[in-house]
Structure formats: structure tokens, C-alpha cells
Image (cartoon, rainbow, N blue to C red):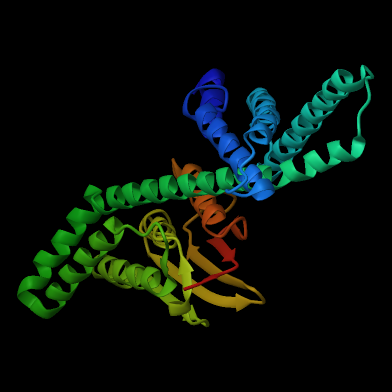
Length: 352
């Protein structure tokens, strides 16, 4: 992607909508008008509604809204590379600055008309800024939550697509069918169970889990996947689970662990002539829930393990999903040593 295309994608993904045109600007003006009506109602009530006060307060609020829109629009191109929290803080400060500028100009003009003297009452300016701080904070918070929801829905949808593609990859589907064909005559019960596991995996991958699933469901799907692969790899695949927490009460994004386990089997254990092992440990560390996934590697002395193509993209996507789901309270770390690959995921859980 070119630099201009990348920058445009970042602007499109900006958490504040484009307030300089279209629906963004219209929505901002509608909110400003409703705020003016609300402030008039609070001041005079319905029975003694003061239209003159409404006109005055509307003029001030609309000027603040328009100047804020200019500041926020012009700031988009300079702030897109900053962390989200810094962007939100800077934009909030810009809105308060717009409120202070408008209040100062209005006070200067009003006092000049009344007494032909250019002077301002700084207490009134501070009062205007403090009043503007409340709706500005609420609106920016709304934009932030909408942005987080869009990010989570997009990442979850992408994960479901990737999971479905993973399930229907020829190597997995054909190997599963071959295992079923060989089991039908010698062990029909195991063949039936394997088919049920395969159907459950497809169903889980396509399930809409945008609000999260229990960690128990995620672990169960991983166990079914490993049972299917065990039929093909037999003793070449050894795995072990150490679960030290109550999985049912922990909510996680769907398809959080399963892609990591599949990559461990496909890229770490399957290529090894003698197979390998996979160990998954889930435990509590203070407020954090930790998941350690270790798989063996077949590497020759002095050679470094090369990550498969697309690995970084998949890991970055998973990191993003974790950040969105757990509100920046999640980490994903990788460690590659000579004979094993260690992935550690930890997060502050959402009670489910």
C-alpha cells in the first residue's frame, strides 16, 4: 500500500468522524441545537420559555461547535500517528480552546456594543469553558465507544473469516475426511465422534461471538481440533492441558486461542519427523489470567526458526482484538528458542 493510501486508510479509521462535511457536520449542528434548547429549558422552564435567550445561547453554541469542527478536522492529519488516548486528550483540549476563543470574542463584542469599551469578564469565559467541557467530554466519549465497537466488530468478522478459511483449507479438510474414511469400518463410534467434532468446529467458527464467549467454549473447541489432528498424527502429536482457573466465568473474544494452537500444530509439530509436543497452561497471576502455549520445534543447531508467511499479520490482528475487547488490558508475547516456541497471552478478565 502506498503512503497516500495508508494515510487515507488511517483517516478513514479515525475515531472522530469527519466533521467538516456531510453527516458528521450535520450531526454536530443538531447536537448543538438540542443543547441550546436544553440549556434554555433549564434556565426558564417550559411555561416561561425565553426565545430571546435561546437565540443568544444558540449563537454562542453554534460558533463553538463550528470552530471546534474546524480544529478537529484540521487536527486529523497531524494526530493519526499518535496513540488513541493522546488523540482523545488533544481533541478534548481543542474543543475547550474553541469554547474559550468564542466566549472571549462574544464578550468583547457584547461589551463594546454596550459601553464602547473592549473588555472581558474572565469569570464568564471560565464559566463558558466549564459548561462546554461537559457535553464535549460526553460527545467525544460517544465517538470513542463507537470507534471501539466498529473495531471490535471488524476484527471479530475478520477472525471468523480467517477461521473459516483455516477450517476449509485442503490440508485440514482432506486429512480429516481420510481419517474418517479409515475409521468408519474399524471404529464407527470414533468416526461418528470425529464427524461431530468437525461439525462443532465449523459451527463455532461461524458463530457470531462479537460480545465474547466463555473461555470454556474456546478451550472446548481447541480440544476438539486436537482430537481430530490426533487421529492423523497419532503418537507424533502429544499435548497436555493444565487448567488452574474456572473457565466458565471468564469471557474472551471468540477464536482467540484456537488459531494459535492450529499454527503450533501445522508449523511446529507436523513438519518434525518425530512429531512433537504442545502444552497449554491457563492460570491466574494476581488480577491477570495467563495462557501459556508452548510447542516444540525441529530446528538444526545454529539455525533460527523462521516464522511462516502471514504470521505477523495474524498475531497483530489478534493483539488488536485483545486490546479492543479488554480495553487495552491485554498482552501477547512470543519467545522463540532453539527447540520450542512460547506464546504467552494475559489479560484482565471480563466476568461473564
